[in-house]
Length: 302
Image (cartoon, rainbow, N blue to C red; front, side):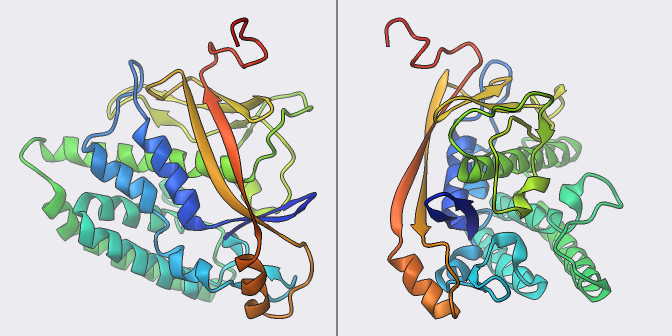
């Protein structure tokens, strides 16, 4: 569960809903500058189902025992995190080998700083025992990739192109993941602060998010294309500019379903689950647009 503290209460977005939003972003990716992914259906499926393992866990109404509120997704126990992602990756693998590969890469990348460098680690491990567990899980999953890659590799590409394209799609998945998370937690009004945008990602451990422009992870325009950094800026209520613009239409409307529950202490997970089930459902509607597309206020014909 993605938990955000707002004036009206706690806003809860399930991981599966967050994945659905990431899948929408993936489905619309590609234009004259940014090449769309191929195989598109497999890559979009991986984006949509990259957190599939959370489905049953979110339905359990997990509780932060210290703060007596619904558990934020970065607060989960490492053992539980391994279990749920292993189940989710296996479920996706059964449906599509290429999608399963990407989901496995996403899962282990969470323990390896999204594979940015050999020494990178995620923030889930709390001690040496957790680090040992996650190291072992990464090794096991990487061994599974050997057979999975054989199943996914086709005669249409030399092996080097296949491997490079696979990692390019992994990097796209990380961007879609983080942009979806931004849409799930960010206030829908412009930032009053001046200055350079910060890199998006480390802020996600917090439940409170002041409005801010951010830099998304670097991605290439194609497998062997130029690496670029996208900037996301809320320029008007509910309107987000992404620059440079990577989607196939000048504007894109995305909805995020969330539940609003009281920001109070919950005595146990069952109490939290009952409140979540009765929570007030609310849709956040975002308009993503290119830098050159006017907002409604700017459009003389609007």
